[in-house]
Amino acid sequence: MLIFDAHLDMAWNALEFNRDLMLPVSEIRKFERQFTDIVPGENTVSWTELRKGNVFLTISTLIARLHRKDAVRTFYQSREADYGAARGQMAYYQAMVERGVLRPITDVATLDAHVAEWESGNTDELPMGYILSMEGSQPVQNPEQIHHWYDLGLRILGPAHYGENPYCFGTGSQGGLKADGPALLKAMDAVGMLLDATHLADQSFWEALDIFEGPVLASHHNCRALVDADRQLTDDQIKALIERGSVIGAAMDAWMIQPGWVIGVTQPSDACTLSTLADHIDHICQIAGNANHCGIGSDLDGGFGKEQSPHDLETIADLYKLGEILKSRGYSDADVEGIMYRNWVDFFRRAWA
Image (cartoon, rainbow, N blue to C red; front, side, top):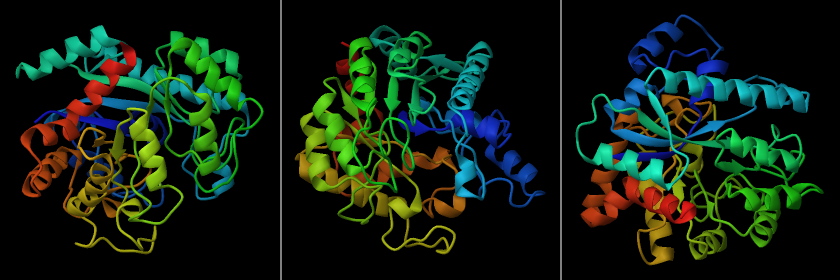
């Protein structure tokens, strides 16, 4: 089974945590065990592990954020530094392209060619595909710079991350679009850049959907009806995204899966599993009346490790287990294939048509 993962922070992990992502996860863990308080828990993601798990296509991010104990120090202190950090991460992806590990997917032609090659079954030497996204809009110095980023290969922008930024409000904060927010969204529409609604604070979410006219996705989100936190989507938000033809990627951070999970306090247990995550997928499918709007957006390298992942997932190569769980719940082979990869492929075909 091929797998499309719609949210991974690969370049951030390589640069911020100094990880050689060409190594197997086991070797990265062995190296990092000699240090304390430098990196998150035992990592679950590398390029080697992605290939092992048939994760043939990802949305991989640029994210201008630091991993620091003090919350205020997680943000760059200047917009120029935000820009520089994102450009540095872009250079990392380009280096992986030149090494033959990655292939940029930027339009329908490159998407269809990539999917056809991987569906042929002869995948040992094929590059993995990536669609370039930006999580948090701080690196965009002004709305007019969207054209510049698009020319560099950026195809998706999630304006928000944690807290507020120059354009809008995100997770853990409250508020609508700021003065330059509407202009940012209109500039995205003008060049054909897609909107990732993930992390938008509720008011910013609704205002963004009112203004933005192009295709919208939610790369890594779960359901507020099952885990009550502002990081999750309400049922009304899910319905609005379905009406826009969106796909919603299931996120694998434990506090977004299991009610009552507290970061740094709750210990891994059988209570948080891929089956618990499947409850979120099923909730969206029940709202939609079909399985066409669900996918995977694991975020497994998003600043946490195995200690904060589903208990039955050792590395990202275990994503296939989610398909087996969905089949055991009565989902058809076609629906499972859709959730595991085809819904995302079809979304981008429509978005880029």
